[in-house]
Amino acid sequence: MLRDIIKKEIIEGITSAKFVFTFLLCSILILLSVYTGITNYRGEQKEYDTAVALNKKNMESQPNFPALASLGTKINKPPQVLSTIASGVSEAVGRVAKVGSSADPSLVDSKYESNPAYSVFGALDMTFIVKIVLSLFAILFTYNAIAGEKEMGTLKLTLSNCVPRDRLILGKGIGGLISLLIPLIIPMILSLIILLVYPHVNLSGQDWGRLMFMFLLFLLYVSVFFSLGLFVSARTHKSSTSFLLLLFIWVVFVTIIPKLSVLVAAQIKPIPSIHEITAKKDAFLVQILFEEQKATMNHWEKIEKSGQTEKEFFEQYKKWAEKNHQEYMDKTNSYNASLERDYQVKKRAQEQLAVNLSRISPASALMIGSMNLARTGPDEHARFLASVRIFKPIFTEWINAKMYRALNVNKQTLDMGSKPNLDDMPQHKFEPESLAISLSRILPDFGLMVFLIIFFFVGAYISFIKYDVR
Image 1: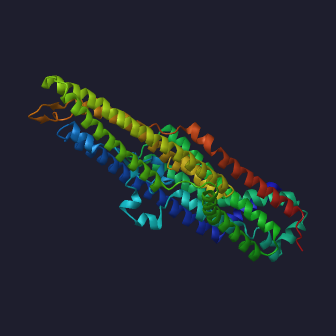
Image 2 (image 1 turned 90 degrees about the vertical axis):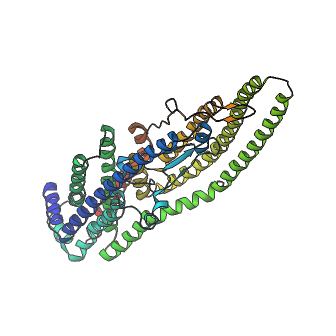
């Protein structure tokens, strides 16, 4: 009997006009989002390759190491291939960090800066479509599953044929969910085929694993709203009441809770402004440069009175200047690191509180989980910026040593050295987060969705057992 009920629900679902409309709209939107994502990714990859090559060319064209030290180097953040599915914050945050011997590096040149239209309309990715469109369709499929049949009298007629209530609600749940997931599963399979055959889009084995978990997260998210719709429909006696109540819950879950959690976290755990942190770094840098200049003048006067030969004078000065400059740069890096560490601890505490508060919403759990799996979230951005700041003292130590060793000074001329050789220049390295670590971080999001599915379905089951069909 259960099989017959499930079959009946699937046939009624896939032959309805709302199924055809849902399938066509989801197919168009999902395939369009994947195509748009691939186009954006390929464009970002070309920009990245061009920027890396241009940075290397600019560095090699410098006449000497002092000029190279003044120019610095630029570290470009490589685009993530799974941004084709979940763009995350990758378009809103910077993509380039300048590393030099003075200011603390920060990421600039976001896509929003280059094209403000992105900040107005946002990205059309599969995560957005599932979060907004599919959740609304889940409500459309279930708001009248119980209350609507009661209004039409078919529920009373069905139960008069000795159909057990537990099997009826179970069959409605399974059959209705299958008919709802078909418009999502088929376009997702087509999306996988597109990613597989599209040129210049190379997915590693770990990327495919991440993609599978992302799709599982999408299915769980839609199932949450389906079970919620079934529960609300079993608690009401009019389909109009059920629809309005579900729409109100959808607005709260999808829009209000995520935004409210950020505001609440900012009040509970306030952090200093980024402009305040930058001002402190700049003030300390000015102080350090003044102290270094003063120390250089004092040392110059001291060794001038020593009676050394010109060669001994300038050889001693070069060694001292290299060591002195490195000491002041170490002080700057140490101060910036201490300031940044304290700021990041407070910022991380605020972000974690906001994330934990927002996780009561399945929409937030979907966004957090998909961004972590796609490596396009704020955590990956923070990890990349931290790796750049770790690289800065390594680069400054190398350029400082090269600059002073190439310097040739005498009383008549000042030779800055020849064109720089970059063969032994240290390279920035950034290891993306492993799949195992990403899964351990999004485990609460999977757990929350599974809990909500069970909770709402059990609520619907109990409510239907006691439902008054008269």
